Length: 120
Image 1 (tube, rainbow, N blue to C red):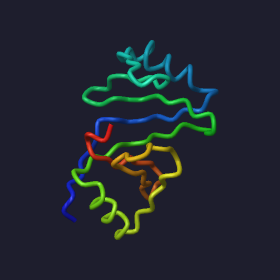
Image 2 (image 1 turned 30 degrees about the horizontal axis):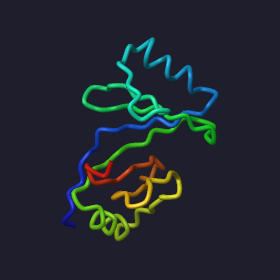
Image 3 (image 1 turned 30 degrees about the vertical axis):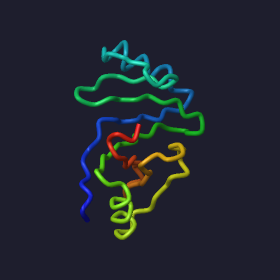
Image 4 (image 1 turned 90 degrees about the horizontal axis):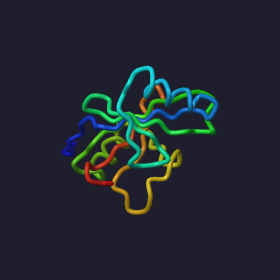
């Protein structure tokens, strides 16, 4: 594989509607993290060098954590993951036409967005 893959800066927490407001309040009021709303309706928090996004996910019954990986060449990375048996799961959330990235899941079903750093 010639594509380099590194950890990204975004962590998404997909939270069911019945837990969403309490989860936002926990990170804002209890933990005291600084919030930001640059991608409303999603609410994010500064988490050290990372960004923790809290997304309301009415279709879920329990919270999930989604991680981000950066690649310098997403077609090469996509080929690498396919050759190693990693299943893509692009249907879980649309990335939009022309987005240079894709979704995968690890063996424990943790979702990862694999994308070029300047894809957004």
